[in-house]
Length: 171
Image (cartoon, rainbow, N blue to C red; front, side, top):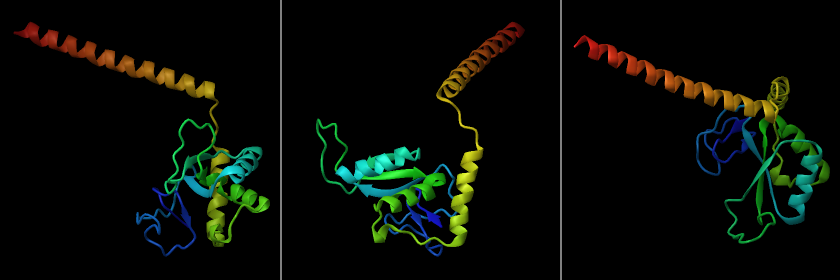
């Protein structure tokens, strides 16, 4: 299994060195956090896929397709064509959901080897074992980190001033 860091696509062919879409060098061992392209959808199909992924509590994001020439002006609806991405750790589950609701097209199905399937299971297990921070804990960590950083800056400024004062006192 290979991964393109730019296109966010997986490739089942391990012999590939460069991405078929953008030509970028492929990664052999992506992180379980890496966003992976799942499918491009629009309209009702997009909402149907989002609903299925939401009900399975799989994290996802979507972006307007770079190949979409349509312009969304003053429109609260989703863009015309959206690329849907999931973390690598959730890719197998999302793939099974799309197959279950009939959203996959034949050309979208990747034929992974047993080793690749094992990598996907390992990525899911790794993600499940990592403790998830609640939004409150994450905010507290950010605030404490900023306070510590400001303290270090003030300490460096104070020590620099003290050192310069000592050096001035010598002359």
